[in-house]
Length: 421
Ligand code: GLY
Image 1 (cartoon, protein in one colour):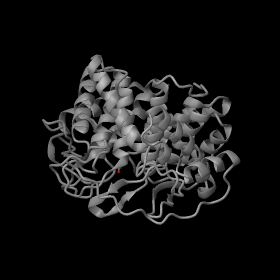
Image 2 (tube, helix red, strand yellow; image 1 turned 90 degrees about the vertical axis):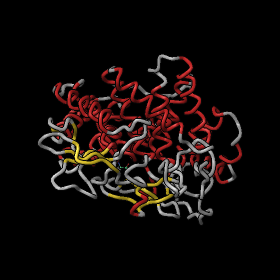
Image 3 (cartoon, rainbow, N blue to C red; image 1 turned 180 degrees about the vertical axis):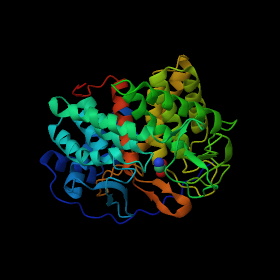
Image 4 (cartoon, protein in one colour; image 1 turned 45 degrees about the vertical axis):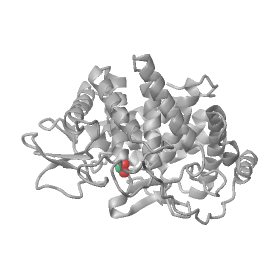
């Protein structure tokens, strides 16, 4: 049994100004216990509440961040966003949150803000020093292209194709993978691959279907197949990193960077693997990717805490939750249910995703009423080096909003989604 050791409630900072009447009303609702007041109610009502309050928090965040060349990443213990430049791996998530806010609300202010924080990311399209171009570009320009209308968006396609070209240059055909841009414990001249890279394949799959060369989708499918072969243990848990000989493609060793130990399963890595496999199936319809997504999902769900929120590492004795892993997995499950043929399995995955969302929409995870523009508290970035432990993260917020959108769409709620290309 996993017992949470949440730290005591922290002192909350005062809010910044600039909230509209609608936003102010929603924040006031939150401050009077909006989220807590509805916990225990049906998920539909929790989601409606979470959506409204999230929109208000995002509106507030715009007046706090102000400079559109800076991006929220993690938050301080006082729940204030720490801002970084576009080269941080997380920079696509904030514009992605604003695009989702536009998708949810249809409010043109969110589109304007989303475009403002998307534009400076173009600079990253030639960044050969990162494997995270899928995160950066699909969350920002990718969502913009999907949701926006009008000639201004034509440039988004060209920018995405250019970023895909840069990403594809990390592929090694001996290994069958894209190379990780970092390894804290390198083994000689090894070629490191981390499971997180699965999340960047959608940029390559998308590019091949949208005017880019076919080899990009071939690289992405090969990377996913290599991950199936080399990253997954017999029980369905995953390694975080596999190091290869770049000349022969042979495995040198396997282990972890961000997890508790080489033999444990880091929950966000498991969630990245699950989500990435679902996306690989979406684009290829290869049965092996669907089966692997189910295996990774079964392991994740089989190791959840009682409140359906995952520990940061499934085997660690340090009993902290990581909401980011839970949000990623919940969103992935809500896509997986569209592909699973077996009725009872589909119902099982849907119920598990709903149980996760039920917890995420409530305290102590959902931040309504505690004076912050973050949406969710209790993410863990990199515990072994004590970096951003048990604080909000922008990627938890991004996948939380995505999961809320997917839940609403599948529940037949009107989404007010403007439809672009
Ligand atoms: N991709 C980096 C992380 O999940 O922390």
